[in-house]
Amino acid sequence: MTNFLVKTLANAAALAVAIWLIGDITLDEHGGTGQRALTLILVALVFGLVNVLVKPVVKLLSLPLFVLTLGLFTLVVNALMLLLTSWISGKLDLNFHVDGFWTAVLGGLIISIVSWAVNLALPDRN
Image (cartoon, rainbow, N blue to C red):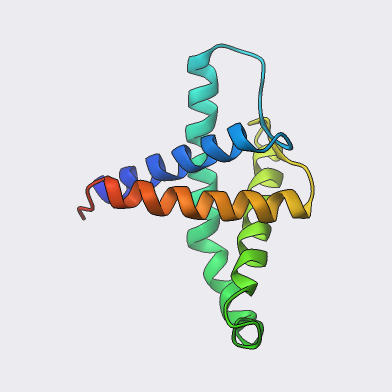
């Protein structure tokens, strides 16, 4: 349970940095700070579920592309997971939006780096 909470907080922090750095990744501007924080946590949960349920299947199906590109295809998969999160968040009325594929590639790169750094700093318990 603690590990799930740590990963969700890391995802929320990484998403917050991506929203802050990239103008085309947006979170609902309406509402107070508490409402935005709750929306960010909910989007982080959706992002975590997408990464746990969908990403392994996509990686398995695209294994030849990973080998062919020496792992650079990971950027494309991360971008697709971010776009899927944006789409699901829209369906859930969470007002998180990623505008375009290249924005998602840059956002996925930032999210990967920030979540890696946050996971290093936060305790890892099961």
